[in-house]
Amino acid sequence: KAGVTQTPRYLIKTRGQQVTLSCSPISGHRSVSWYQQTPGQGLQFLFEYFSETQRNKGNFPGRFSGRQFSNSRSEMNVSTLELGDSALYLCASSLDANRGKNIQYFGAGTRLSVL
Amino acid sequence: TQLLEQSPQFLSIQEGENLTVYCNSSSVFSSLQWYRQEPGEGPVLLVTVVTGGEVKKLKRLTFQFGDARKDSSLHITAAQPGDTGLYLCAGDVGAQKLVFGQGTRLTINP
Image (tube, rainbow over all chains, first blue to last red; front, top):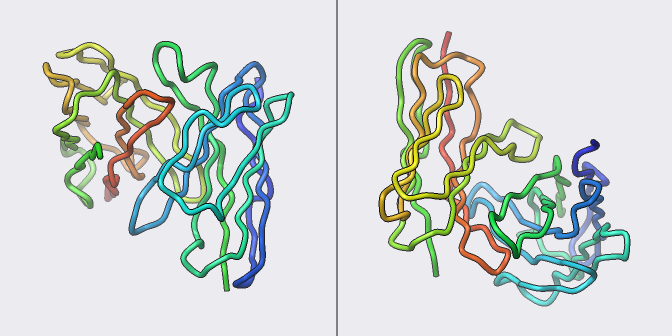
């Protein structure tokens, strides 16, 4: 069974631009979560989607948004990029994080550099 | 705000030594997970502990969940260079959300 796939692996953008990251979950997994990882803050929860609906959101500004499609694939978008948005963005999928143990499987991440 | 304090943040030891990493919180978690992350990769799940006092073993790695489900530890026996990596603990706080510790960057020197 294929794992969580994130594309692209690397991105370089300039301040003010916007960016879209993609995540394909493990087949059969319906919950997709997004995290931002930086050396200073560690892993921080962005949001979680299930059945095309955002069920939970972390403490990030509205510039960070996401969506989920009917096939469970998910995208996250960051508008008006700032230097501080440079980070590794990780996607994780699970069968259904709302029932039982919340076991999440992570992709390799997208490394975003904002210049 | 639930926080997970992980210690130590950095650890460099010689091959063959033993080590313990701690993950502490004032909050109760329904479960706690340990991950290992290699450079340029996403975290890989090592184990999930659910019951207070639970102990799980994965070869030379021993994981323990505190009786009150607020803390956990990871003990590695006879560390090997292949154990090098970033170890992360994550607490399940419900509402489809994991709270992560800052991580322990472990280096095992040959």
